[in-house]
Image (cartoon, rainbow, N blue to C red):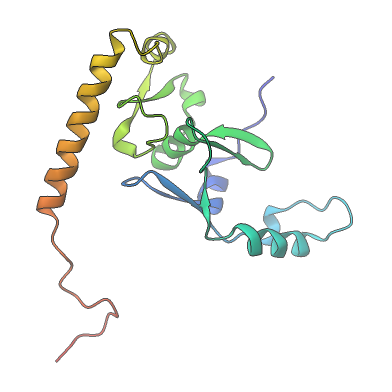
Length: 165
């Protein structure tokens, strides 16, 4: 039986997700996010965790990036989807695949929901016809990135929030 996934509300309390870069960062935790088990109090556990992890990048290892949230191993793509859409893919009965085929690219625009049978095809070996679609998707994302960069305009208001005279 699969382990229980954290609630979407908990994910929002624990992580910051940037859909444009696909990166995750740990938020500072509060003591109510820890259980009292063992010699350390929840406040002490919280202080230890925050000193080591708060504001650091999360889900950074491996080709198919995954990580642990309270002892449950979860794919970063599923966490990204859950944070962006407020629902776990498993609860919808769908899988999340990477349009480009690059499983470490967790930008929201690179993620797509697919049925279980389509997921099998999307994860086919690289010598299959899935490769052509993967290359096309990667090229299109790079074109979209370039268009976005050309349209980007800096915010005219000062960073400090103070108006200059």
